[in-house]
Length: 104
Image 1 (cartoon, rainbow, N blue to C red):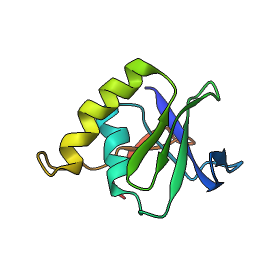
Image 2: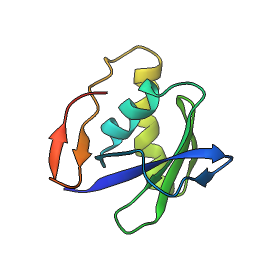
Image 3: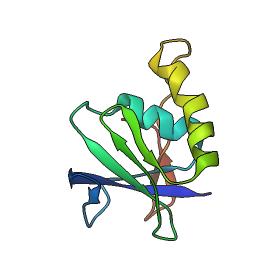
């Protein structure tokens, strides 16, 4: 299972050292996390290879580094933001025990 470490950004696109969350790396899960995020929080989404995949700003995508990822994320997030589809629960990952946590 692929997962992303989510780091809060206190400054513009500057991730904190330690991740705040770990989630499953799927477009729908990333979109659900972003849409459910507090409007004043910004996050960096980092792969298990320690590479930044994207940044969010409040409840929106900010910078997505791969064009293919951008397209698939837009296809997942826009219907959630427009209320066209229900927002699913975020699939969190406990990396220590490698178990899913189903709450936010």
